[in-house]
Image (cartoon, rainbow, N blue to C red; front, side, top):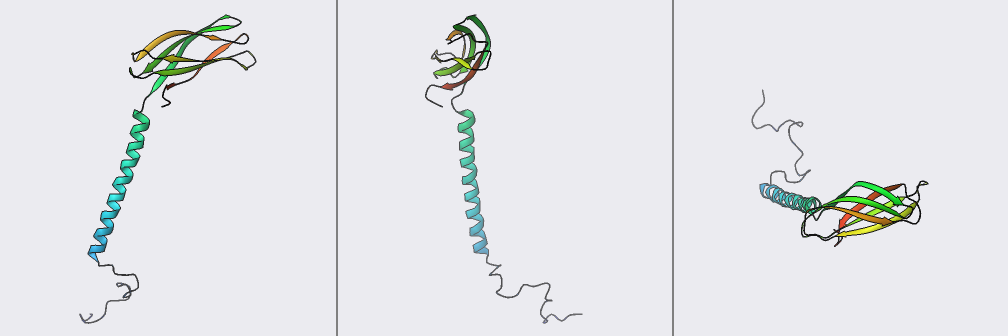
Length: 142
């Protein structure tokens, strides 16, 4: 049985002054508040970037079909989706049988509609065998 005046066992207590003041509640609270504020600020920045990326101006398109009408032209049917107040630009490329690029054209869609079906013509330098939609963007670069 131990006496109440005896020092605690060496395994139960930390050496005095060795690890700083562990019982300072004011410092612990200050560190908790600063850590919480920094954490919330970090999450707000991540959320801002995420919303900007996902909710930014989006223009998307789909190549529905294409027809090779001659050695110098390919007719392409595009479907473009965008915000009604955004001007979209879609790029179509064409390739020859050997895989080389034979045509490229940008098409602007300024209609105040959110879904546009349009047939466009891409001029080629020689006979194309395929057409691809390279991509669509907003005219302001977003």
